[in-house]
Image 1: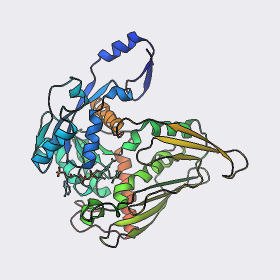
Image 2: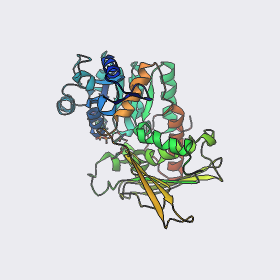
Image 3: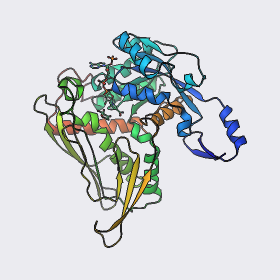
Image 4: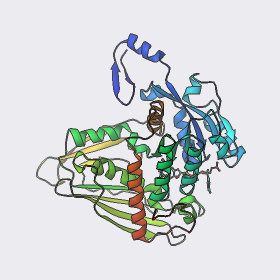
Length: 399
Ligand SMILES: NC(=O)C1=CN([C@@H]2O[C@H](COP(=O)(O)OP(=O)(O)OC[C@H]3O[C@@H](n4cnc5c(N)ncnc54)[C@H](OP(=O)(O)O)[C@@H]3O)[C@@H](O)[C@H]2O)C=CC1
Ligand SMILES: O=C1OC[C@@H](O)[C@H](O)[C@H]1O
């Protein structure tokens, strides 16, 4: 039997049945999750925690769901019944006995001794306080994107987490996809397209025509709009491929130029476009990034490498010109990377390994890059004139 087994972040080929049996008998590290907010993304996350890790060739870690906290106990109970009645994959496999418990407050989840890490799936406006409360209660934290409303808020969380030696990470799941690592390899190591001079990335979903008027995405009091909700995805490609490019020496983009069109009914940003310049790369590289909650994107311009979906990539296409320099004649090579479930599980596996290994920060999603992201968003909102209602931001921007 030949089976590919991922023991840590690296992949090991085990080509004898004997080796496979020995590895299968090793009990994985089980991370016990407490979920905050019984909404849409929490349900996707938990559904992925239930999927067997073997489906993605992982044997060293597994996930238990031990508590779900909601502002309504009935909602928490319904969430468990619907998405994780037996718990996560670790409970289903019999590695732990604890069953998921419904909690009528988030505080009760922070206080639960059967919880190691809190997953925060609440609206943007709650991320700061929910993360702070969880850290103060001594729990590790994986907080949905954007980690906080502004850079100043995350600075406070970063200091708090480090002082308490707790793991804290913004849940930019796209960073943990095998496709993303493969793309970095072919660009940085194989250098198949030479120097990067320009990168375009868009992530846009037409929400205004499909969601209710009171949806969080349109609500300025929940910091709605495209930038904070969808903006992390176009940005992540600029950060991974340009900011983290070996020749960029982690130099922050030199210029940020941004423009916003507001959704007239509520004042959140409808269309947002921005550019970031990286002067150390090639002759000078530019990322042109955009997001919109008013149209579905993107268009299909000429490209050298195209990743099919900025948030949940499952394939990339390498387009090579056959003749001359133009787009007229080209070959296309499609590389596919199957996703198990929604694909939030690679991020969850990585968090389990960090916590197992006593890490308090992810090199893949370090605090410094969340701070960089949020600093860029602060500047885009300043240039676009998007001021959040007084009181939403709990830490002053000038901190
Ligand atoms: N990684 C990804 O792919 C995705 C990430 N996200 C991120 O996750 C977060 C949540 O988004 P999503 O799941 O779509 O949102 P939902 O509105 O579906 O769920 C948010 C949950 O937060 C809780 N909540 C706490 N305070 C409030 C409040 N004042 N108003 C409304 N709900 C509140 C509610 O849970 P309860 O009533 O149980 O307390 C609610 O169900 C966002 O920050 C978003 O950016 C969202 C979608 C995809
Ligand atoms: O992260 C996200 O990706 C998918 C969108 O539907 C969602 O609103 C956003 O938060």
